[in-house]
Length: 149
Image 1: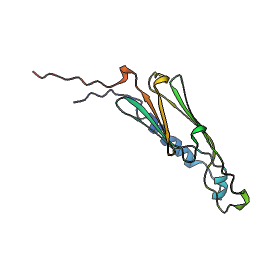
Image 2: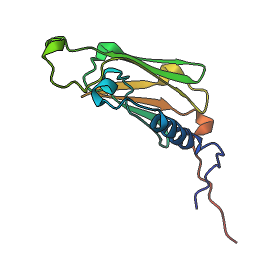
Image 3: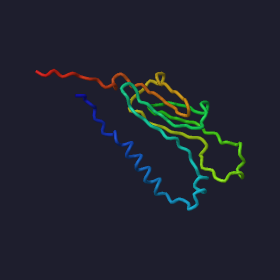
Image 4: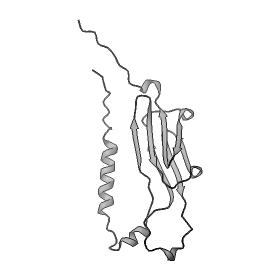
């Protein structure tokens, strides 16, 4: 049997995401869909998961150049920043429909424990940014065997 440390705040991020979604859906929007698309704010999708050795952040950044992405860490907060450049090959008046979002993005996440920034690894391939943050030694789960007499 594996012992798992109880974390009372584990479900808080899911709850926060649900509350944010409720407020996003409640905002009164324009009846004209195209007007909504002109107010596009780009926020890339991010998954964060935990494995035995590290916390892994995976962000979808399609159409973003590697040189336009930065990863910063300060006081247990990791920040992903970047910019998706506007495609200027087509003139604005030539569009029939324009749904893709462009511009800068900024995502920040609080890490659960003190980490060593020099140990963080980031990889960017095919529009996917993957950041691996090694856990401190005392954070790693330990298995304890129990002798039954």
